[in-house]
Amino acid sequence: MTTDPHTAERRRDPPLSGVRVLDAATLFAGPMAATILGDYGADVVKIEHPKRGDPVRDHGPSRSGVGLWWTMLGRNKHTIGLALNTEEGADVMRRLAADADVLIENFRPGTLERWGLDPAELLERNPRLVVARVTGFGQFGPYARRPGFGTLAESMSGFAAMTGEPDGPPTLPPFGLADGIAALTTAQAVMTALYERDARSGRGQIVDLAIIEPILSVLGPQPIVYDQLGTVQRRTGNRSVNNAPRNTYRCRDGKWVAVSTSAQSIAERVMHLVGHPEVTREPWFASGVERAAHAHELDGYVAAWIAERDLADVVAAFEAAEAAAAPIYDIADVFADPQYQALDTITTVQDPVLGPVRMQNLLYRLSASPGRIAWTGRPRGADTYRVLHDRLGLTDQELDRLAAAGVIAGETA
Image (tube, rainbow, N blue to C red; front, side, top):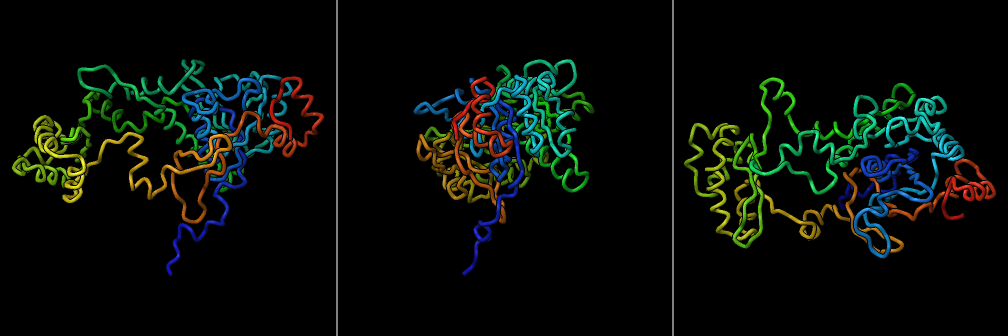
């Protein structure tokens, strides 16, 4: 019997076991970065305002009084209520940071310093600490102190300007795209700093991440194209400026399919499939950019062929021809898709209030030391007493006094 390498090593600890992370960030890039680290075994402590809690608890839909976004974003995190803007709260934070590997925060520049939590001073106390500072515009520059959200990054990066129909307005995504990209980047930056610390210098450092930058980095070669050619990319709808046919097409049954022809061979297969091989012999067809200049003609051929067939038949025909097409899914379709099911992309986790809930699984699979979702987002302050007792040695009397003073909030042990 062959042993599956993905299950043979399940007893090994997750790769980030022993890494202590303090998540003092909100909405959304910083907390998502901490979630990613927690998914792979990091010991994450979520620090919330003792009265208000994390804003995401009340953000978006809820069920049975439980915020569903928090249920997902707060997974694998211990929660403590701590007022960082008080002298005693800042002292507790300094003591937590003295024994941590990572601190993730997204307060406006100067806020931590005003509270007596200057990252440079935290590094003096704990030279191995990695402090990830996630803000809209970075720690310096003329916009540094402005409030920053992902929507502003989507606007300022060029994403909105290039998204939408040519004769329509700039278009924003209906979700936190810039925040998500920044979260992935923050997690990668933290891991880079931890590797440098552990493999080389032995010292931590400060990560300065501006949400306006990572999304700009994934928009392709626009900066160098503008620098060298003076070209500003305009809105082209679902079409590409680099190849064609590339669009979404309506099927006979009212469903939609997307077609991509980034590779020359794929473009040729598509045109053979839809009954117009003659265009592949045109001189311009050999260039993706030239095909894009003839997108209207090519789209017409593809759209007419697809419009005469149901979605299932279109997808099957493209697969048989080894051409690239995919159905346009909503989330219900994602749940039902056999490939997503095989990958367990949407996995089931038990929640103490909601029961079994389904949410996005881990970002990637590791064969020898996989991560896991141990629990969903916990109640506000659920771990305050336990974490501060276990890590800092605070007695029940000291914890009760801090609670009475409004410095901490949470359930008693």
